[in-house]
Length: 404
Image (cartoon, rainbow, N blue to C red):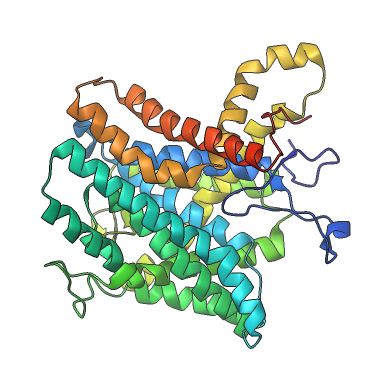
């Protein structure tokens, strides 16, 4: 089984949103054309589905200790996955060159910042209309949107992600630009993990009656750690990320950890937004050093498993024979949907909580997987149509095609 990304007929999709790119040797020139890796888009698609599942967990999982392992397990990796991938394609810039810094801010910061405030405004209005809240409540919420952090609730609780992603991209870029030695970068990443697991809550900041740092700046420190790990992981081993000899050991290790969690021998919680990190084995609490190692290593191992699974799922998209295409159609369809979802994770992140709330308020369905499907499908469809509208407006309308 070869899970390599270095196949002769590499399957790629066009770029969009948060850049997931690969470059061949010839493309490393100044005028290189960046293209997306399908397996990495599939990994992001799996990640966003895990986010929606985690935000819609039924009571019999959340409130029954014997079943809660599913909830804890999803949170081991679904958000670190996005931050790890976010670090893959960062690159150093000349911090002393004003034009270079300005270009970086325009390309990597401005669009996400604009979407943050636009989506926030629309969701605040939507919440006001759906739940008939007062204008005062909504105006106060606009101020909370500016401060961010844990002051955000309702439909915008997920906005900690774009906040910390932005801070993480800027902070990590500064670090890799100022410090080029990779070993020092990894030491910094380790120190960030160690610091992030050294306290329960920062009490220096408080706003709107909530103890929280503006824009979850403390959480962004751990985000930078994962981005630094991702940056170096891709720099040193991009050709090995989906190799079987990386995938299988990671799979065996994560499977063992999962079984320990299921059998209640292992207790490990990693909730980034609420800053809850705890661990125990055989009912003995872990020390700070052990906890920091787990927070730094377990999400990376889980992500390596997701990368390997994504490569396997993506493999049928390479098939060119008609008979094989027909036989593999269900798998190819799943792979294509996950790949497209991976191109539209941001709108799915923004909208899914509102849709889940609408399903609950209107008593549409109590079926868990149907709720997840609807909460994923609606923003995905909106995102696809909006992208096609943008392409058509630019005179570049494209039909979504299967790669060959």
